[in-house]
Image 1 (spheres, rainbow, N blue to C red):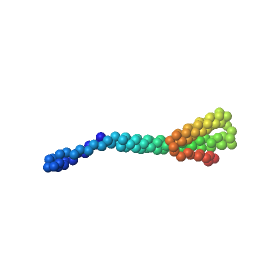
Image 2 (image 1 turned 90 degrees about the horizontal axis):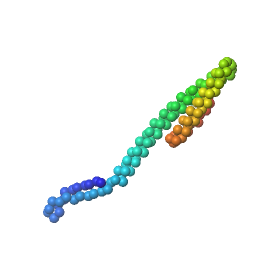
Image 3 (image 1 turned 135 degrees about the horizontal axis):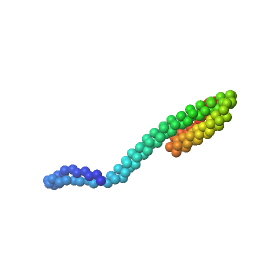
Image 4 (image 1 turned 120 degrees about the vertical axis):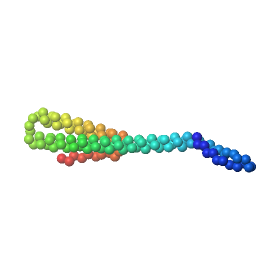
Length: 116
């Protein structure tokens, strides 16, 4: 509730003129706007973090693919190939998770592309 009071002269007699106004809906609307701005900022922060995580996953994925290629050219310990395959699956799962997070945040969808 907002109250305005003004001193007036009413037929030579000092008086007060008061005005009341319900501003609760305006304040509620302002609070919703502030909440929306906060959520937007949190969403942008989360999207930035997810992008950074996705970049790390992409770096691991590229390194593993390079190791996989080198191992195919120079066969060595078969356990190494199994480990690389398993790690590649994990990076793919991590990449899929970051895509889901970005989609839920309304961020642009990344289109990863193999470099090797």
